[in-house]
Image (cartoon, rainbow, N blue to C red; front, side, top):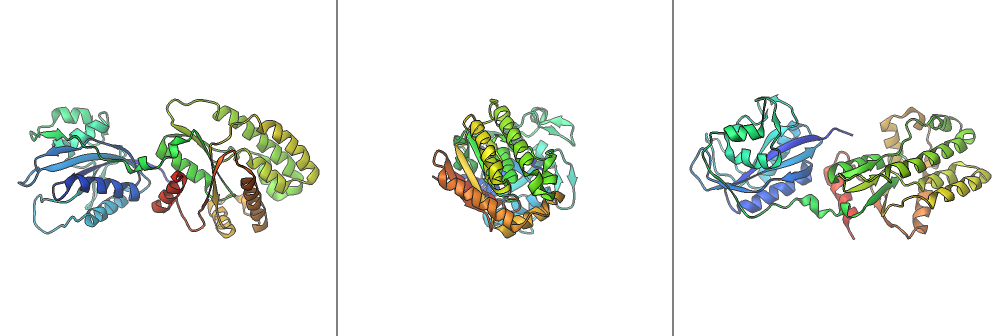
Length: 376
């Protein structure tokens, strides 16, 4: 997965329904740029540098996978869609919406199109005040000082007044964190880990990822399934059982819920496909002893993906030992998952068809998945 970049964006409006313009901008940034972590209070201030209507201003803390240049392009597009008209006149002008990148991580960017940190932010009280509300100790990498110090030393005499209306965070509409434990499942290559990681990052969840990279039997299994299936499934069962008790049993006071990229029941699904009949009977007896003592997810999400797309994803991620996986093997696993889902009623289960989605590259696809997860 791409790295997340902590970005601070200022918003301003002094034409039309100013508060609505700010809210629409927040919504558009969430939909197109990334998750909105925090929103400052809204401040009213006189126009800065020219005579016009008073402004409403705010600052957002956003996490995004886009580059700073891509964020700038998206913000300019949002401004246009919200009615901002740019002309050739010099100087400051009234505007329906004004969006500026203040910080992009700790990077210093100086190009013809973009300067980050914003070169004027330390001179503007209407930027520093809402920014200080979000990140008083944020360090300015070019001026080598904090926002707190910049605020204290700012010579801007224009008053800023906090209004009594708060912008809404559109992320709050997704009710994912109402669950204590969510398991995301799917076939090999469906994108379980990617989705679990994105949800954990966006919703302050404790992330539990299956430990499979160090399993010595996995590469051998794909070379000789009949010989290594049983030791592979037994080692996975032992490791998953241990991880369920270690990771799920430890309370994290700083996280809102737990999201995992697997459910321990997958052990039985895979075993039924890979093991001989007598091996499977023995395995199932051991599994049932362990399963009754494990925590079950309150929400079980199954990512349904076509076999063709699964094979494409497997090839793209490039694990050598997976390249011999056959369509028949994937279809057997898919059937095993769907048979399991049909028989389970104690958990809330949601099947999400992601065959025509790319939630890693397309944020709208990701938001559609969140919408389906949140829907009653």
